[in-house]
Image (cartoon, rainbow, N blue to C red; front, side):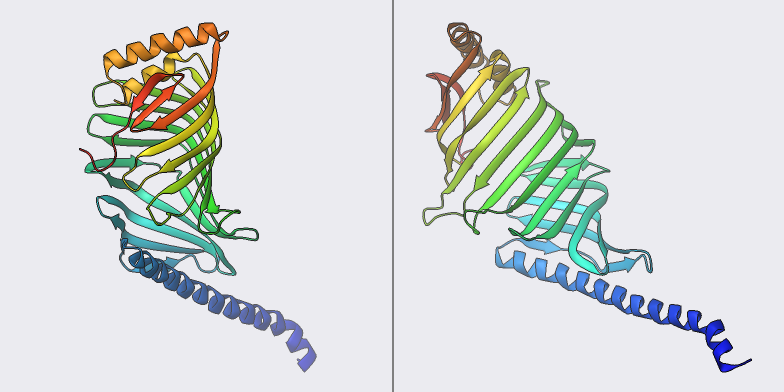
Length: 315
């Protein structure tokens, strides 16, 4: 067999072998980058007094994809804790500027001494580069359930996007959309959100520990009450709120019922708020257009108390 014929016979196999070897080294480099990125994340969180712990990262998927699996992934910050039994990280070996995270099995969240067990088989989040903002986090879930004792939250679907603010790199812009969220409290009261759309900008803390929150737009249907609002709030370091939102509310009785179910009003206050809102709605032709004021632990609309909020430092 001539040399030319041997090349035509073996050349494609040699070429394929070289391509496969190159792909393997690229895949291995991607796996190492994934490990170093996870370590850098833990180190960066530690600088912000957030503890991140996890087991060994194991990678698989060659040659078709790159998937990392981390056992016992946990994040803790004071009384707040998140744990995932097995965290999956998916990426393309040649495009590590987009990492997709998902949790296999049940997730646990501890928030202010309450433990929530979360089941969300379709939930995933990605971190990716953005030409305008530098980076973006995009999260979404299909059916999700969270339980804590007798309390239960179900969500049909939700989407969340966040990234550095276009106005201030130290701030964060957040947009979210939630469909069919139902909450049942420990005493059996229910709150139903048919849909929620919101766009919010949150500034970094100033020297006094306050954050500026700009609500560019919030629109929701909660317990059949239709609410839309926009405005600005200030959040103190103890969680106290102050500020004003320009709002429009249709079928307002449902809003008072939802706030009572959330224990932001007691029964008598809820009945008074429901009656007052009904009178305002009648006087306004069926819907209310008025500012919602946040001040000294209270939320008021047209002089009617809608809620009482305790600062986080209070029991």
